[in-house]
Image (cartoon, rainbow, N blue to C red; front, side):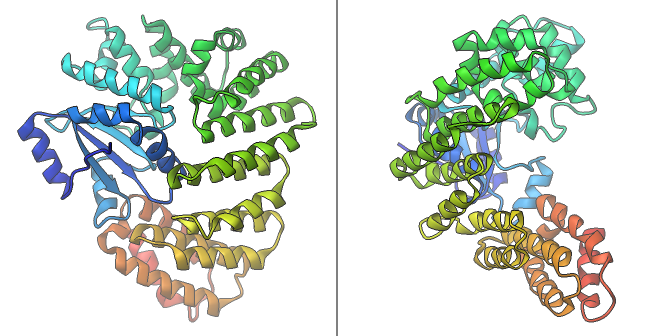
Length: 443
């Protein structure tokens, strides 16, 4: 079974949704993005989710497709991946978090469809909760608790600030599970954690599991902003150990839990014995993974875990071994450049960034990788005007290839990072190309 992605333009997809009176599920992503690959392996390949998509239309907007960055600006899409469920009239029902595992994502998707069928949406539920015109239903509270606040881009929040909004929602929720999840989000947003509340959640296997994405990604941050840190670290480490051995979870999620265990141990004491554990878990997970999407995100997680464990040389070997088989080796070349930077090997940093740019596929990816190389080139060898001028000329070609999209969303953000660096360059052979680039981001 596979998702039936629509062909054609996004305008045609919305027109078909209106004509058929069916919701539209939009996936915004890129081939090289590790979370996107996790979504493909953990969610899109799940039979239960594919079955659910029969009730909606599905559209994949690739960040490297023609005009994609301009469309992303129009629909307020930036982070890869962003997952949006639209009503037939084009209004948003909700944005779904990519971090949920497949089982929980399917449940959140079901809730979103149920809320839509009842005539509501995340925006309507938020207004009801904060204005008090009516009491939100249990499903509406669940929808809000599973909203992707990280990819909102001001769509749902508008002028509201995130932290007080989440705090108010957590306090008002009549759905206990939703209140817990909203509270965890609120604590991260405010920078103040409730140790007693966290301990009670971690003591409840079901509640902890339903919020595994938050604890795996931000559990360490929650402990750092809470009291009773040793107690919390021990409790979360115990839960993470259970997740690491849970064969129902995907290999990347299990390895995320191993990494969390190691980081928790390092928070308070030397991680004795955990280096070997991380090394063995990484080797076992990679040996068992053949799916290209799962493997892409698994390698990314493995490298992070190894680096956190102080096994930088092994992390680099994992990356080097993966390049020949990866569908997006240019992404891992960025990680190899970062590894070289930690070794203070400037020549290797620039070499890997240059190789990543040369291998990159897609107009947006090429432009963004080119800026990354040029930024490092200016930082590490500001005196090498000939090399900088050559890079500027090559980047200009990628900007021209991107067309109007060069001034949109992720492309524009990258060029804006480059602008102040260009301003530090001495006049000379690099100046004409520098002026062209500065014109791009200024207009």
